[in-house]
Image (cartoon, rainbow, N blue to C red; front, side, top):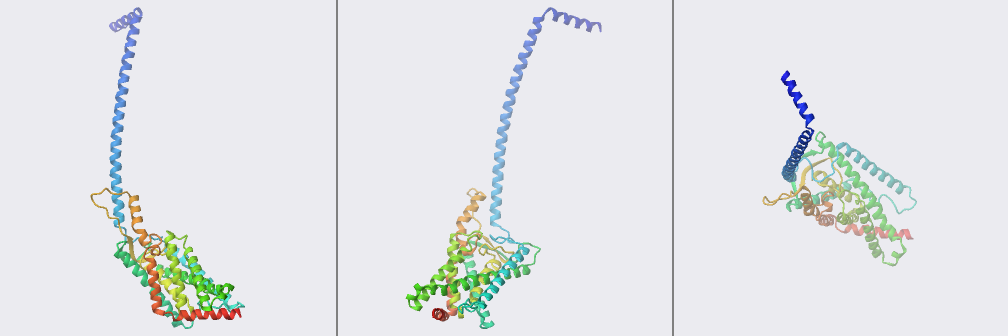
Length: 400
């Protein structure tokens, strides 16, 4: 204890007698601490830079690996699209289809009832249910006309599918009674789809081909400008003009449909011409032939063959169809998902119609022309001459 106290006393006395020594020691300590601190900072900066470089390298490698994996996944999804997910359609639940079908059926009954009122309580003898093609000469003839139209519409839709499949634009991935929602029943959904398209067919045919086209011919013939022509020539001009007006409206009714474009409008314009022909060649200008074609086209394309019909959503289908996958060689780098989608769109959609459906494809005009040829083969031109003569006679009697 005495030695320790003596040492502390000696140190204290030395500090008191030599203050400059204390300053020198302090300065040395400060310089050494600054030097060590500077070295430490440099070392830390070097470590940080090295760590950042390693992180960038690992991040780049991770992104590259992730992108490669994502691209492979995208391609595998493209190549092995599930058979339970039909191709390029706006899918709906069965309950949604019930609502849509109810609305279409209500519109069809409203069209029928309003047509009956207008034809029954019209003071003019010009308009009757027979004039707009809703007459029923016999139920057998109605069934024959509707059945022929259904057969024509279904056949040309099937031929389009076969051609697209043979050309490699689409793939058939399965057959079955599939619904969009697994727990729903196929036949219930399909029944509501049938009612939906029956309502669509009836409503559009009566409004466009019955009222607008048929009565449009009568209205145009009533103009004084047509009186200068021979009655048959005037009737031909009126018919052609009414076809153009009706077909234009029919095409533009689909402008807001999913995936529509100028091409689909041109194709549907030709479809409107084909629908007008159905009226002219059917016995007595009946609409039942056109309704059968319209219904067979829609139900066959959308719910049997699994294709989109003017972007109309569906709840079930029989045939599973997907777009043909993009083939990528093993030597080439894998394209990104956006590049795959763009290549698919450019390569195939302009052929098979994409989201809108075959009505926007390159085969649609040929299908419409083939359908018209089939109708003429079945019915000939005999009824057209009778229909036009009746149009002329009604116009003459009305003018007198």
